[in-house]
Image (cartoon, rainbow, N blue to C red; front, side, top):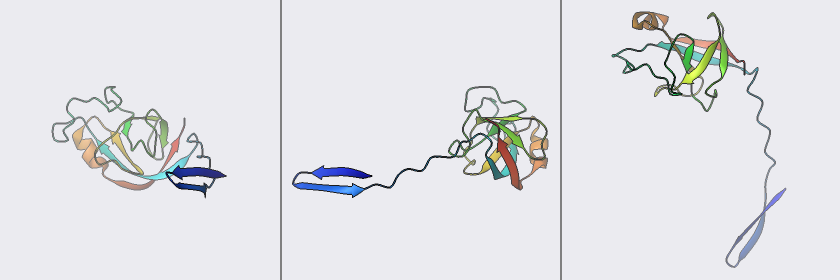
Length: 122
């Protein structure tokens, strides 16, 4: 495949590599770092509204949308239920998920968990 390029007085053909298809997100598993947050004054989240505009509630997680699209449903190994990616955060970059927990004390007790398997359900 080629891509013609031209400029005043210059004409060239530059070879372009074919773009590989991006693997589907659904069913993808990845290892993430898992932390927890709450709607608290100490965390600067007292208003309790997620990036997507919905109120944070149990089942809400913050993600890096470049890794996990907002709106995705997730199964997180070791945690019960299904979670929804509805929030982002300043410290959430790459393969890092922040789980909303109602109590600040419980969020702090949750700690930091590494290499947790997450499956994107949709």
